[in-house]
Length: 205
Length: 205
DNA sequence: ACCTTTGTTAACCATTTGGTTAAAAAATGT
DNA sequence: ACATTTTTTAACCAAATGGTTAACAAAGGT
Image (cartoon, rainbow over all chains, first blue to last red; front, side, top):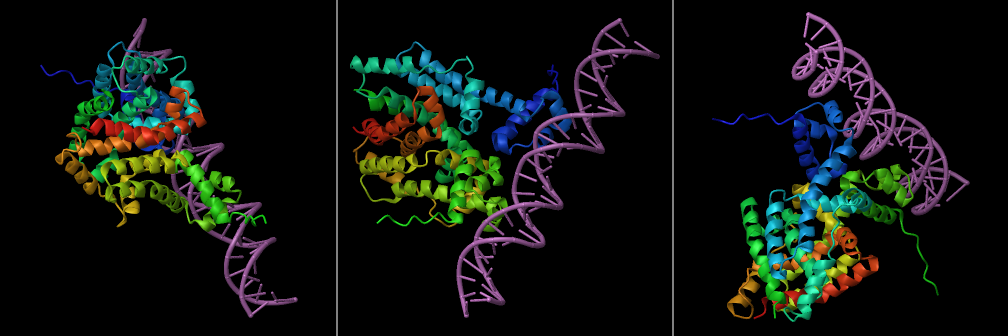
């Protein structure tokens, strides 16, 4: 009755190892040998599966970016009331990132170190964010007198900042505020409600 | 009547070059040769002034951290009304960072890659942040009924997130929202007022 | 059984990179 | 002017690192 536990394939092990090492040390700091060791294989085998470091990095980076950006795009395109959008964005985004708390800093840092690479590889024809609709929606709510006169751009920045930044600054916040792993998770869990509540209090009339 | 323009000393040129390269590429990605080239000197001279890469990095990192953390600590210790504190923090912090927009991501990333180093080098007996007073102040305002019942911890996180994150995600926001350098500066200038206004709207009764 | 393809390894290679050496300039003191 | 100290350089070195080679083992097909 126990399921047959198929060993992770070599490729899967490589990808898991590469993700761990790249996210921990960044593209520049990661060593192919470390990745091979982490995967429990020979370095040559690494190159057998992935031509070179760049190619392997690309796979990892694209997968990471693919976890972070679609959700943001969703909030831009969805057809829901503003408050609902804000609530579901916070909850879903925090849930996703909580499983990989170091992804945002990894991705933002690599974007920063080579914005052109990012632009060409991640947004090559694909779903590049279209914030216009979301911004327009906010403006409409303002026009209808449903919420305070607020700049859509700043509201958007506030929302994303409050949701993502605690992960980016995780080690700092933890040291600074004396939170262990469990407490940090708990705080981020609270934020799923806290952030929407905060925003709504700030913009409702 | 024109002031004598003393050439920057070699050491100053090295520090400026090292800052540029380290902030751009990170500790792991920075090359000593690049720093030497940027400073217009020989690589051996670099080692003449700074024993090794680690030591040079330490100087740059500590200077960068020294620009970012004291201001945060100030808000924790200052003896001012809550709303005033929030306003002055946003304005002053944004002013400081606007001159070095890439410092926060640089520092956060290096902290992330070696939290122990950070702890030992930056907060070795020095002014490590003491958020307790600030958190207590918020609680008092709540108790006095001056502001809404809000979690001090989350308020603090919100404040710092909204202030710092736009710099951390600068390239992303710029691409995403189509902001050139000037527009970005202008938006951040607005945020000096926008963030305090947003927070106050959110917590005032 | 035998051949072909796929997976895996140890040893090796070329380049990059942080760091050193020894000697030449430049500055400083007397 | 001369000796001493400080600054700067070209050449060099050893270790690290990404990547390759060639041979070996395993799997799959016939």
